[in-house]
Image (cartoon, rainbow, N blue to C red; front, top):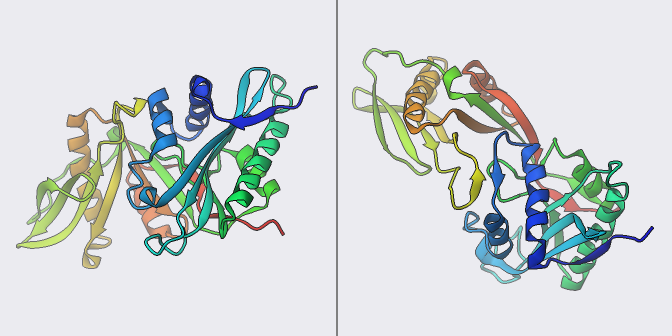
Length: 304
């Protein structure tokens, strides 16, 4: 049996690579897929990463091909070593994302292809002589970052290659807008809608004082980037005066946001919380959210 060929990405790979990316996205987020143009654009620049992306000195994409089929792909970044780059990323190399088909009767040598490609990634890191080596799974789709628990084949690959999870675990939650709390009057409290940092902000006020606010980002489904992501929004920020904790104000704000989301034609709302923060997780569960997945951020190459 001929071994898979590992080589640089070619533009003619674009459709197969997009299919492979969308297979991984579909295991994490319901009803989301990305376009060929989105994937190609991600290989050249990541405008959403406005802090780290300008610090990237070099990018390269490698694929493993078997009998004319792209069965694995990886996108690598090398960060600059100058003082403008943050300490964590300075002179660092990163597997920004790695995708490969799980082993199956149709793809019996999928793990071999992934291991060969990983070897090429580590060889590239050695040529770059990077100070530290990271790995992630930040595909160009909403909610897909870190290494989601839905990708056991990627987790196993990273472990075989010597990457260890040293960062945080985040819980991604999702709710149907129809299941969110219904709007109810709250004596002496008014709601004000303004532009916030992450989108439309709904602020609760009483007697001229701000009690809390919630921000909703409805721009996840940018049509020029995502082929299919309509009806999806996320909670950008939720901030409550400590004195209002336990009063139901969070649910009251969610109800105001839900009413707005219905007008926007959005039917699903997502939120993110650290797995260690049990109180916010319980609050969201009580408001109609359920766990979509967990994802582990912060993978460092520690082969020994």
